[in-house]
Structure formats: C-alpha cells, structure tokens
Image (cartoon, rainbow, N blue to C red; front, side):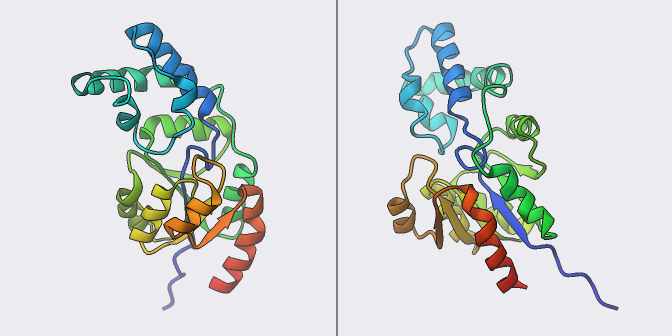
Length: 208
C-alpha cells in the first residue's frame, strides 16, 4: 500500500508580504491617539512593521499601560484596519501558484490571529493561519505544518525560516531592504511577489 506524499507546504508572512497593512494600522494608531490623548507618530510606526504590537507600543506608552492599550488596539482593528488594507502586488497570485501546484499555503504571522483571518478574507486569499508568532517563534508552526519554504519581508522572518530548517525566501517589500535580508541569511531575495511564480516553478520542479 502506498501513501500519497505530503503536499509541498509554503509558509507566508502577512504584513508587508501578503498585505500592505500600513493604511489600516495607521488608522488604528490615529484612533488610539484620539482615545488615549497620547501622541503616536503613526507615519513613523508603519515604517517598522514586523515585530509584535507590544514592541511598537513601548515607544509611546509606559510598560504598565501596554497590555490595556494593546487590547484596545486589537478591538479597534477590525473596524478600522481591514477595509483600507490591500493585497500586496502579486500576493493573491503567489498563494494561488502554490495551490495550483498541489501545494499547501499557510500564513504564519505576528498579527493577532482573528485579525489576520479578516485580512485574508478581505483580499481573497485562502490559506491556513497561525498568528501571534514572531521571528524564531514562527518555527514551531512552520515545523508543525512541515513547511519547506517560508516567505517574508523582515529579518525576523528569515530567522524564523532558518530556525525551522525551511528555505528562506525574502521579498524586499517591507522595512528591510534586499541587502539586510541577504545579510540575515535569506536563501532567495525577490523584489516582490510578482517574481514568486517564476521562482516557484523552478523550485517545485527541482523539489519533485
């Protein structure tokens, strides 16, 4: 009796990899400024997306307020951040390429998981999701899913891929440029996800 081999699994980061979350996140920070009376430079904050929310909030709030403000941010998020946030160029097609080849796409992100699901539904991307994981912590989900490849835009994503023993494919569409991504150990660096289908065709034929 033979068993079908496990599908080739490709993990994707979310913010600035699959979605341009800057407009939505800026809107939530602006709303927090109004509600809390504490100025948050939202234009600056969205230039350094990737790490968990608490890391950014620590720039603006004392430690004892971060948990409460973070909870309020996540509550505001669904109403203010989903609609303004588009897919990144080539994102829908990149995930579709994996699925068309018989592979499985999973999204592993530092974002609050329920909000990540709302984003994917909004832009029409069908993938399994695991949230609240950053950098090396992403390896747990990547290993659980058996991901052979992890695609992200941040040096933290490169570290997560390497910790999981997955091929690190980096896109220079977020806060880290191509040189930083290479220096962090990315195996492949693409300009953006429009380059992914051609790369994946060669990779998957070699893997087969």
